Length: 122
Image (tube, rainbow, N blue to C red; front, top):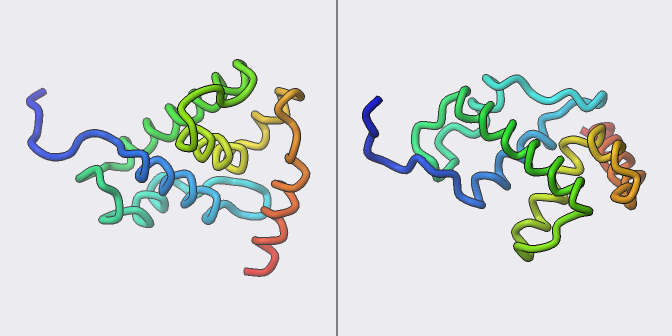
């Protein structure tokens, strides 16, 4: 497949925007938005040009894998503020994964209460 000119990479800002959109669009039960809804929400706002629903699905999967690996390693050890920001957002997106790692469980109650409180007031 030929490479199409344009921005094919994901920026840190894109990763943050994707995770924030998932948090904002998730329902009370924590179900994530459909990929199509997520795509429509982020269309034209990402630095990555022409990101398809498939691209978003792949990026979401990669962010989830990174989160799981970070938990296995005991939390964000390096990468400074960027990795910490992605880690904090990922805890809100995937609280079920966080529960599998008790050593990283601090703050989970607050996250769940914030999520419920946020959605109840909408």
